[in-house]
Image (tube, rainbow, N blue to C red; front, top):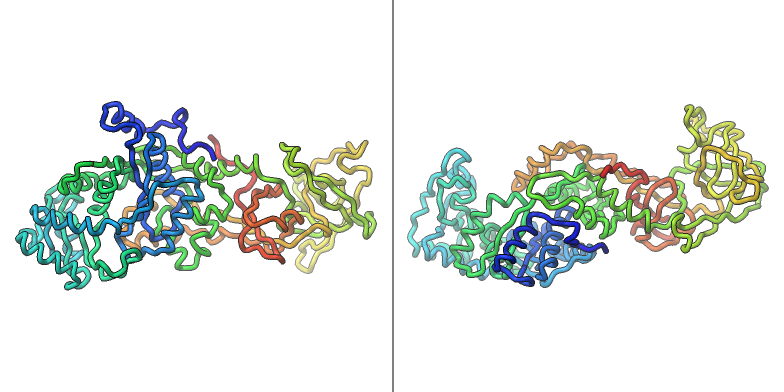
Length: 569
């Protein structure tokens, strides 16, 4: 794999911050500790890769380490399946961590520190409902107003908080809130909730707790407890940084991590809302979290993307403070560039039409040698068979072609790759006018490589003989989201806490034609018999990977990407 971090090629503002801290003596080489905190409520997608790559590469550059910490403070959507899936995806990418932690590992510490803040007069139990808290909070231009329960005594707050922990109150009836400033210009500082009641079994702690800390309270405590020096997160947390620092200060941690925000990865024709992706799975619009149309790592892996191509894309997309959108064509360019060098060539006919060479003897065949890679002769070649009956792509034939159509048509000649020049003499059609058989003649003096076979024709087609053709299914994938307006993506993310808003924001953008299945495709024996996960360049068609749905009767191939590169550097 290409180096995860190359200081000669990559420098960004986070480097500059850490470099300055090391030069000032605040840290030494080897001190830097980061963490990647995914929530296990779904599988990670390519946007998460950027975040983990930044965390991992920053720690690696400065001789430190990165922890993988599961943010499991909300048990309603979190499952062990996602914990295992996230770990597997990160390992597959070639990234690593020093230790696996869970936010729930720190629930006892969080509770103790919440009690400490109550005793300091910095937290109180509030009886307002969720909607009432929102109404009391005020707006960006108007201050909030104090809760009627803000001035409860320390003793009453301690008693109520313990009773919350003991399960005496129903869900939503009380919260523990920080006592900061309801007139703060930063809404996040207007007495934010620190704990809520939730009588739900937790995937990691079972039934031990019925109160759970909020992310903004738990996360800085987890960072400080683990010895994290730099809490690197996406830009939407910038407004939460004062609260992050407040928790660190009020809990009186000696080691104070620094939060630094960067712009998240946005990609054209792609949705980075995990809630929306989850809804696609639950509604059956996709086959699962590993559907090859999904931007999840599981989906990209099944689509045929490699770890190297994904990391290369993240590196090229860059690290910045300003919002930007990466072109999905760049991701395609990265995998195409890699597979052009590494993928063995093979023949597949995705939409076959039968061709009969009438002047070629029945029962006769001859060997045709085709190289495995044009730039790597050391890989050798494989042998296919030319015979009387063969198949070409339906799109390579037209009954009434336009002027610049240089493929097969009545009375026209083309060369079959590695074999002979053939000429269309006549065709058969069905009752709907569809061509069923193309009858041709061949020039026996025109075989590729034959002495004197230098007659030129404009078109060269790939083909498979009936002898070699093996049944296959080709799955052709397009963008799942077509031209999603970016402002709509912003809106979905802004209301990420509202499941319905986040999930429905792209409802009209789902591309129902994003999967086309060619059930009658044909491939050469080498491809039919290869292991699942083998990647090929199917000549003139695109790059494909053999899918796990393959069986002894039919090989299934997913199109990774087409041959044409539309990305402009």
